Amino acid sequence: MYVWPSAVVLAQYLWFHRGSLQGKAVLEIGAGVSLPGIIAAKCGAEVILSDSSEWPHCLDICRQSCQMNDLPRVHVVGLTWGHVSQDLLALPPQDIILASDVFFEPEDFEDILTTVYFLMLRNPKVQLWSTYQVRSADWSVEALLYKWDMKCVHIPLKSFGADKDIAESALPGNHTIEMLVISFAKDSFGITSKAY
Image (cartoon, rainbow, N blue to C red; front, side, top):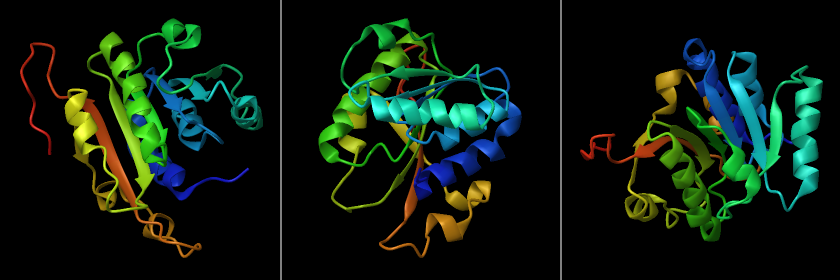
């Protein structure tokens, strides 16, 4: 099993905010090895891990991570971004959605945000905590966030003590990691909030 640098940075963000996770409903999408979801569960959150329903092997990896970390109460479900499935419909409202390096292929960006939008309709106060590796300066979710009535706040890695050696690791390739918190652009009264 391989843990991507973005997952480690998101796990560090969760650990920094561990005091606020107790009892929170947390869904990790595109979980893979599930490091952020595992950390959230260890901090007392009620966690559901998800990966593509089209890749059963990925769901097995999520289950294996739960087993290795003695977390039998963490549920694993198959969700395919952009598809409304029975598993998606059955999810309870979430407080936090975790997404580590899901903004990998631009053709998936809108499917991801469509799924997140559906979950936000169930709890308009839910936040998407996302880390991603910058792969191209030309790739951005900003226009799609506007389309789906969402905003994002860029979180400086130093604000939560992210390990610079991981976020900008010496592994092959460039590993500049960004952290975003995405939410609805309007509050429950229909007032547009300012994005930072």
